[in-house]
Image (cartoon, rainbow, N blue to C red; front, side):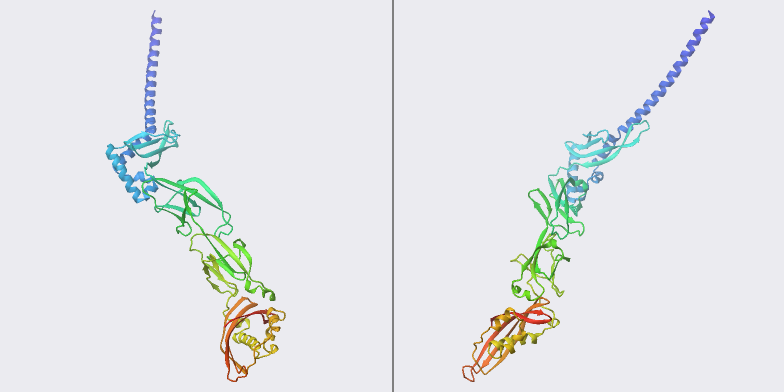
Length: 462
C-alpha cells in the first residue's frame, strides 16, 4: 500500500513539472509571437503610416516634397502657383487630406497610396520593397516616389532630332517625357551637316494648366531651331532649309566655310555650256562650264553664307538671283592685275585700232590686224575676207579711247572691249569735211603657244 502511494506521488511531481515547462514554453511562444507581430506591424504598416505623415505635411501647406517629384511643374512658375492654389483650396474645403490604398499591378513590390482632399486627388505615393528583411524575415519597404495629380488641359507633342533638346518653359525635358517611339530618316545626300541616318524621338507632355511655351534647341550651339507644325504627324518638329548655287567650273564654292565644289554630293549638273565661249573654247586646252549645286540641311533660312573663289583665288560673295532662285555668277572674272597675263591697255588699244584703221580704209590688212589674228580662227576667216568699201579720206584721228570689260574665262582665254571716236577729214573730195564714227569693238583672245591671239570679234553700236 505504501509502495502504491509512493508511485502516485512521483506521477504528480512529473505532471507538475511538465505543466511548469509547458507554461514556460507558452510564455516564451507568446512573447515571441508578440515580437513577431510587432515586427510585422512595424514593417507592413510603414508605407501607410509614412503616407499619412506626408499627407499631414501637405495639410500644413508645405508642398516641397510634392514638387520634388515633379520637375516640370516645379520649374514652371505659373504652373506651380496655379497648382498650389488648387491644392490649398481643396484641402481647406475637405478639412484635411485622406490616404487610401491605390491600385498597383505589383502591390507586394510597390505598395501605392493615394493622397486626396475629398474628390480631388493630390498625389500618388509609391514605396518599394528592399532586399533587406526585418528581424523575423518580413519584407521591408522604403519611400520610392511621390507624383502629383495635375488636372491641366494643355499638352504638347514634339518630334525632336537627337542633336536637339526639347525645352518647356526653360526646363530641358528629361528622358521620362519621351514616349519611347522614334523615327529614323535617311539624310539627303546633299545635307551639309550630316550623312547616313538621323533619329528623332517623340516627346509628349500633358496635364499642363497653362498653354505651354516650348522650344527645340540645338545642343551644340544652344540656339533655337526653327519649328514647323507637321500636319500629318500632328507634332511640332524642326524645320530645315535648302539653297542652290551656280558657278563656273574653275571656281570654288563654299557654304558656311565648307567647300561644296570639292564634293560631288552637292553637284546637280556640271556640263552646262558657257554660250559666250562655245565658239572659241576649242582654241585652248581648257574648257569652262557652268556647275549647279544644291545644298540641304541648313538650320536657318538666312544661315547660308555662300562665297565663291575665282581661279585667281579671290573670294567674294555672289548675288542671290531671285529670278533663278540661287546664288549665281557669270563665267569669267576681272583680274586684279592684267599685266600678270602679259597684257596691258596699250596691248588692247593697239589691236582695236589696227582693226579700225583696216575697216576704215586707213591701213592695209597685212599691216594693221592680220598679225594679231589666230590663223583659221573665226576672226581670221571673217577679216581676211572682209571687203573694205569705206570711201577715201585725207586724215583720221581718235578721241576718247577707253578699255573696259576685260574678263578672263580661264588663264588662257579672255575678252576685252575697247571704244573710241574715230574721226576722219577730207572725204568726198572736200578738204574740210569731217565726220565721227563712235566705235565699240570686243575681241576674244586665246593664248596659243604663249602668244595672245584674237580668235573672235564683235562690233557694237557706238
